[in-house]
Length: 254
Image (cartoon, rainbow, N blue to C red):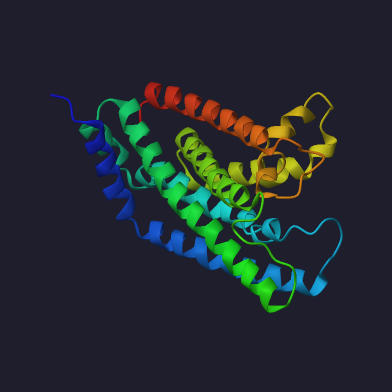
């Protein structure tokens, strides 16, 4: 008699929430994210209007830059924590169908990321706009055009990063290696984008922190006029990484 998938997901959730590092990482996510928001918005208010069009919503969501790494750690730990402790073999004995085990881990990762990411984006938006209002600088409301789309888009972006991190954790089986790769993807590659040949630069329309992150803006970006298409392309890339992770997880010994 096979165990229902919901029970496998529940078991993975119990294991994940029992890790102290889970709660430390979540606390760090909100402390760092909201701290950066407060500091960034205070500086933005003093520099108003600054250069370029004024987009108070996007400015209040800039904490996503650091938040994606913190939430990426959560996605990585869903997989690598058991490799580090040697409990992966025990999990495979309890759930011999490897694709079911990994799918349960992915569900836990995306569930936590969606809740935490959306909560952070909404909190960052309200904190950021409150800081602007306190300085008497033009600020946005949740009902303004494009605002709700940008805030929810930020949460979905972070959830996609968590899924990417889970895939990298599965492929590398080590927290440090997976995190280093994630840093390279979201920071190093965009920083070196100008060095890539023109035919490769089309990929940057769907790259994290470049095209995909345009969804967090309410003022149209001429470089990325279709931000939701950019985000969808990024999600397709994440799905490809996860597909490879599933194949590798099923074929190797542990």
